[in-house]
Amino acid sequence: MKSRLIIGNWKSYLGLGAGIALSKALVNHHVPQVDQTVVICPQLPILGAISQVLNFHQQQSNGILLGAQDISAWDSGAHTGECPHTLLSELGCQYSIVGHSERRNGNQETEALLKNKLLMAINNGIVPIFCVGEPLTIYQSKQTLAFIEAQLKAVFSDFPAIPDQLIIAYEPIWAIGSNIIPRLSEIEAVHRHIGNTLQQLFPVTPAESIHVIYGGSVNAQNCKGILHQESVDGFLVGRSSISELDFLSIIVNSNKEFTS
Image (cartoon, rainbow, N blue to C red; front, side, top):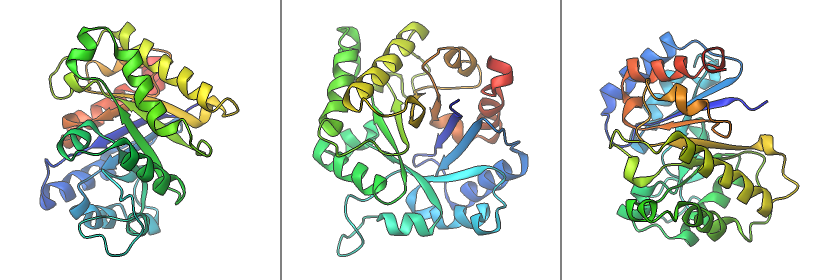
């Protein structure tokens, strides 16, 4: 049975002091569940400080794992401003977001670049959290499924093999930060289509190795309903992940004992 994934994307909201305080609070108050994985993704400049709080080498993170918001498409070397996989691994990052819409749009990240980032993560033991999602115009024209399928095929159609673990995060762009989410039936339909598309691309891949999670205005109130959808394996949480109370509430409300 798949574990549920609750991943917090801090974006650029928190400074050093606030990030350290939040990570300490999560370590102190999180109650690990055997069927749930919790990951936080701080900004790159404060990863080192947060890694020290989680203290992976001493096994004192209380079930809070570390991820990055991005990964370089290149190995370490003469690449100014990049954060290579070697450094992420040294800091204890086991996950990395790839292709978030805010980077696709704000940083003009191409599909070729995203494919290289995916390969860099996969080939070096970092689980990628690959983001897909449609703009409002596509949603309104009822072209969401075709749009998401095209995003997946653009990077995975000639992939050498599926990784041991892969996370696809469906984040409708129009829902991010809007306090509006798609209808639950729409979320289920997109997640099911993502799973079917990947199964077609990688027919011998066990379904358990692919997680499809939802992101976009997730909060403690709507998470239970979303998780009642059969194809939803967890969440990529944005703004609610920078509040100790909100994030812990999502974690608790996502426990299988409360949503089954």
